[in-house]
Length: 278
Ligand SMILES: [Zn+2]
Image (cartoon, rainbow, N blue to C red; front, top):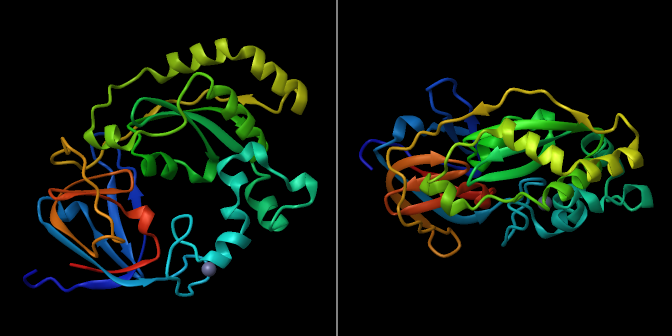
């Protein structure tokens, strides 16, 4: 490790700056209060060691196991952000009076949401709050994205997404995303095709939520490039739960993955894991 001094802290998901033009996204590893410019480490060795400690990303208490990518069990069972309806917004149960944290729900779910198309491992549909863009796309390793509709609530975005899922994937095939074998798409053409073929379903949703509830967006597609020296041809994953040491030459950064010559690791999955990084 030479003269490098190890940083020590609990891992958070990497901070990604979108870059612009031909300039690739910029990645910052976050360990506690420490930041490490990962773009500057491309082609060099990177050494991470999980100390065995895990701290809940919400309450900070130590936990033996991480739930839902970073929470202790009590937080996982108690927080609205860990409820099933966050992953499946169509199951929102606020109106039944059973929201785990109604105020949190009002702040996060009763806010405009964007339905977008992205190209991460092929065409996919997704939803997010506007404030989460473009972070959400970068976290998924998307090379292209296009916002297509805006709606008033998270639940409405869930209904729109369910409709699109009849014709488009809603998940990223992360192995394909990392291998980089993803052909560019004309997202505006894809949007127009989908809006036409899903018109009856969209009309039903407008009837249910009001004629101005689903607003078409006329946005420009955006594209991203990632700092990758060499994409893996065979994707092998590192896992701190099985081996506390993850080391190798840093070959690339895409989505929330570090690509090392020894394998890849999804750092988001290990949010809250204390690590030494050198
Ligand atoms: Zn907790």
